[in-house]
Amino acid sequence: MARKYSRSASKDVRNAMKRRKKGTLKSGRKGRGGKVKSRKQAIAIGLSEARKKGKKVPAKKGRKGRKRRAKKS
Image (cartoon, rainbow, N blue to C red; front, side):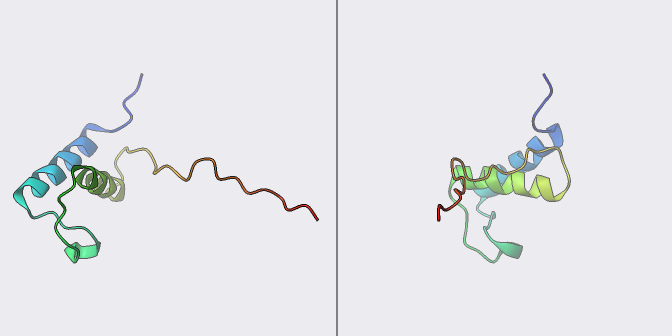
């Protein structure tokens, strides 16, 4: 079975985790947001950065179970 995430994408996530531990990882655009303390948020930021670089990362999941129904008239 093939890898879902590339090894270079894993490095981006690892880098984001290190920045979180160091206290330099920020949320938001261009680092204007506050410090990231959550482990999950650090992983999400790392994956987002990998996607922007064009690395092999699955697309974000959409909302589940929310189908539009046709209105009966």
